[in-house]
Length: 92
Image 1 (cartoon, rainbow, N blue to C red):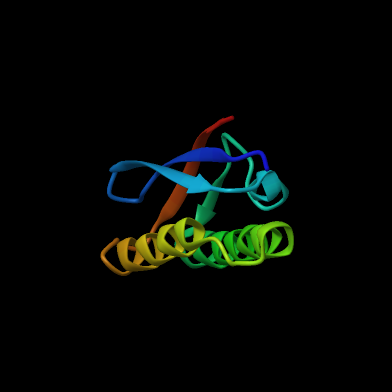
Image 2: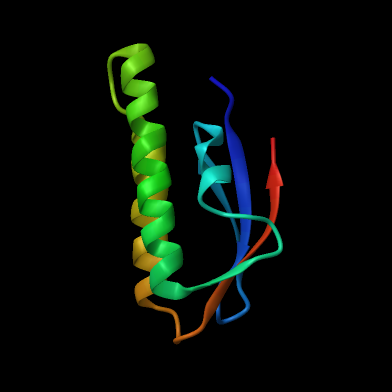
């Protein structure tokens, strides 16, 4: 299963590389675009949940790495000021 990283910049300027076990993130985010914080969290929640389910379909168990990444995104978002999250690049 192809995996990827999506590199983001939080509203406070901090950069982070995020993991997905599937390329489905490309259906929800685009490099160079920015998203309102809540919208970004919603989009990544949907994408990483789909990615985890794709792992379940193929291997019989959900992807704990995708769910851990989602938990990190949700926790980090709670610490951010209002603003936009920029998707900087995809790495395959």
